Length: 232
Image 1 (cartoon, rainbow, N blue to C red):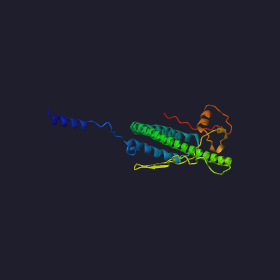
Image 2: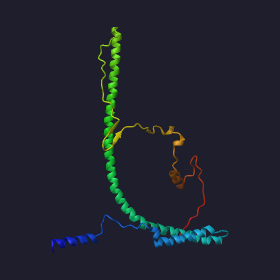
Image 3: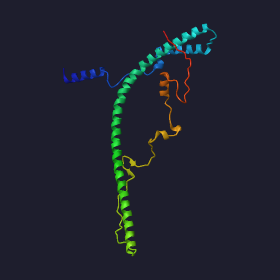
Image 4: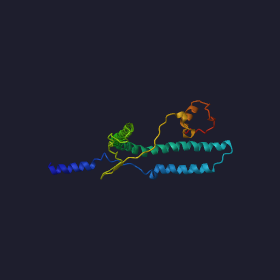
């Protein structure tokens, strides 16, 4: 076999081998024959339910049959839905994992840069406050000395100590970074928070009521008859 023959055979193998990075996924359930048949059954059941009249025990029989059929159709629809969704979700999880990892890395890098900029700015602000305090003390000392000497003249060097002003905005060809003051909060005493800012935990109440709790202040716990359906 010549080198040219080898390359030609290799190209044919590559064309015949499916690309593992590409997936063929069915995304048109509306065109699925099984789904279309299920839709027809649902339309029939909808009409039956709309015009159904229950005036005696005998009328319960067809209604019961329909409820059982509805349960079976729900199961069939769920199974059919899984046929479409599971392959998509399997690939989606893999794709999201890659991008989630990369985005998390960028978030960490972003946080590092922001923290270092914030630390630098905090140090500049500290130096500015310290310089302001030194200048204030020098002015105060000069006034006290002038008053003590009775001359009214300043002999203390009151030349202001200069501190670099914190940079509020930096612009480059790539972008701009600036600072802004925003309001935030933290909870220091939950008991002091007004009621309108508290959220009722409905999931927890449901759980304890189902577990047998029958007395919760501010909550009316009552029994209500429901219809249970078991399809065969």
